[in-house]
Amino acid sequence: MTYRYQKDGDGNLLRNRLYHINDAVASNIDSTDIDDMGLYTSDPTLINTDNNYSYDAEGRLVKDKQEEIDTIIWTVSGKVKEIRRSLSSEKKNVIFD
Image (cartoon, rainbow, N blue to C red; front, side, top):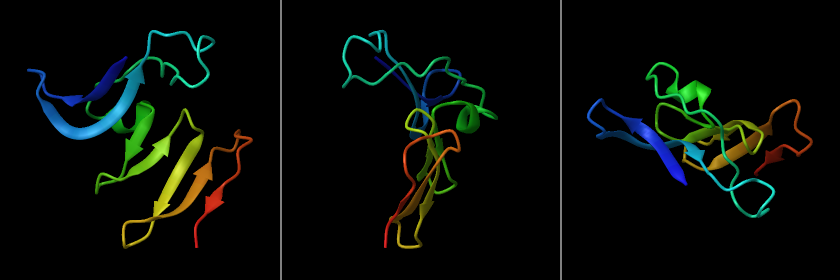
């Protein structure tokens, strides 16, 4: 498994934000194993939009494409308020009170 973070040209970590995972284990081998997320984009202008995970300016996770999460809405106190699924998802949206 390869974990993908934003790094500079020398390989130094720029942000402690996981953007992508590549996994060599086939998805049909183990249903509990995370599936490969495809091609990783390291371009700084696209890293937060073209990869599996996206973050807001404060560093909070706001999108997880593999889990069909289009938007995570956070409260001002730093708790998840709502999880909205992508339109093509059959999973339900979640609202926390």
